[in-house]
Length: 446
Image (cartoon, rainbow, N blue to C red):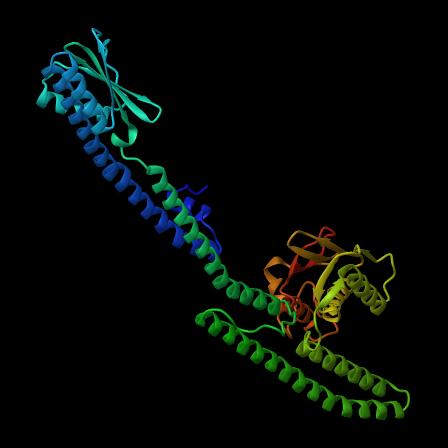
């Protein structure tokens, strides 16, 4: 089991799509930048401002303490304290004869340090104090000569306020930027997704006539290159088909005349042998034409694969004069897929015919999965060694030993079948059959 490293874990959890990765490229720097700004504001600026404000408040409290200490009790001191309270915005009162209880409590360590520094400079260490939070204010109590001086100060004069508004603006602006990025990226990614879907459909042999390049310049260039490539491929296939169709037609004409001449010669060993050669040459020409044409000229349409497989099995059994005791078909209806129906039927017929040719019993099954559909053809024939299974798909190739897959043909049966399957975006594989022979599996993507 491979060891899980941070880099490997990051690859596993990171998005695989272009949209997700592009969004991370935009969002990640924004999150990092906001983290830096938040640290600079709260840990640096916010902390420094709070300390300065606390130091200023501590100076004001020290000033009030000086008034209390410098003036005897009476109207003059009361008038000075009232004036100070009005000017500073504090609520001031004196609890005569009271003592602060130990230990001294504080609502904020920053306030304690700031006031300690001011009291040490102006009053010495002889004036202990406590601090506490009351709703939106701070309550300071300082031990003075005549008792305990109570000072209630609004919170916004002690600590920096409106931090929540800063956070709200920061988060709100980030959400707006992310929303704009999502809309922009979605519009940029859509042409790429469309191009991928069209290329996948073309690989499966489905028509995409309404595709037009759009989007960014680079995506338009890629789409135009795809359209040009598709046109070249279609033109090449058409030219190959037309050429071989012409050759086949030109050769069949003299073959037909030759067959008529042989038929007019009457019965005999030599005419019969020559007539068999003519039939074999015609069969070879038909296979050449099938291989060249592939599935060209047919559009992909939704078809019930159960019906297609059943018809292919019936056609192969009829050609081989095989009874129901030799072939069993399990192809439930209702499995719909966009395919080139006649081409897929020819593909399945080739595989079933090959199985009937070399086995006594053949099982044909249709299985539907979440991402693909399988057509399985099993026989109890001699099979093919694993090392030579891929070799059996080579055009115009015969296996010299063991199971000869192209008896009576020119070595194109499996090549034609694989060419049709790949034109649908699928594949054909050969393996060991549960009946003891060969299993041919057609896998088509959903």
